[in-house]
Image 1 (tube, rainbow, N blue to C red):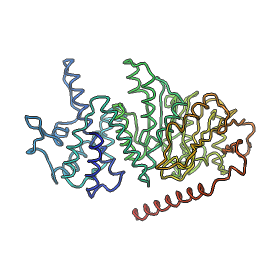
Image 2 (cartoon, rainbow, N blue to C red; image 1 turned 135 degrees about the vertical axis):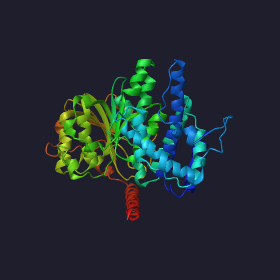
Image 3 (cartoon, rainbow, N blue to C red; image 1 turned 45 degrees about the vertical axis):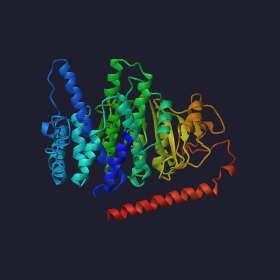
Image 4 (cartoon, rainbow, N blue to C red; image 1 turned 90 degrees about the vertical axis):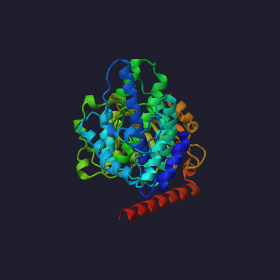
Length: 484
């Protein structure tokens, strides 16, 4: 039922002239779902208060509650067609009254742990793009059918929402930045093994895939008592996100996973002065896939000791600084971080090796990230002691990766098993850091088990990568033309 509801909403959005991409579809679905969720949350809180003999104070004024503007009902509990707005009236109310009212919640609190904060942030950044009031009426009625009460319902909704995020990434252009393959995330979490009581952070939160998967991992393994559940809800997961749409998607994803008021701040992580980070601001665990290829302004670069325009390399400095002593991190990043010969890259590798134990490098195959012709590695490190030895694993799934052959959990099983004891194999080996070049700190992936001539890439693989790069270039040109 839920799946059909999502499909029906997409079909309506496809017909509407205001929403013209997968990104728009999920953004518009998200704000409607959020208000639907908020209605259920208020009802639940009201029932709890009344059971204890207390009076409940609604978050929203009556005019702006779901049952007033979206689904007013008659005495039989059916939609009251006399009161229900539709057509231009509905769009005007949403655009001119509802969104401005909700955006003002941003002025009420700066505490990211409150639902009021989330309301203000979401509706001061998102815009309603649904232009037809008749389409909006249909979408609202479909959303009203979605139940948020039971954990089973939320689990199914979260699964469907994840599928929408994945499809958005597959749609290409800038959608791919929101989706990291979940089997890779789960493998990273398995190695890091976060425990209840530890603070988990993602400074480039995107769709919150890392935080949601970590929530599931920790919930399954912890003792289910009141204290632990409160810690997991309120004092475990933290994130920051710069982009408007990603921020909203991340919040909605976490809500569907069972976290009522996610601690995600809508800020440019890199614009915050790195030198101001104190012990109270640091985390036990960092899991992230920062955006690659971006360029930050000169004034942002001035925040960092190692100046570079590469966004991902600035994030690496931020993550190292944000870890507690003994804290653990797993970060997806372009493989060029291991071998670039510019001064900033060399300085960053030196800083990482001297301040952290870079114990594991996971080399991912081309095609891991659908629609992005970029080779990536995952760096696993612990802060507080220098690196002496690094274990490499070169993932070889035995097939060409891509949209029709995505990464799966079975692909990651050997890596997870061998990594426990840093075992050597045909795909893994250890490197003594004393053996690397002290002038370049080159950490390139060079499998000693593969002969040089055999390590040359097959023509088919080279052609596939060239095609991927051509596609990316064409998409970029289309984006530029649309912008102009």
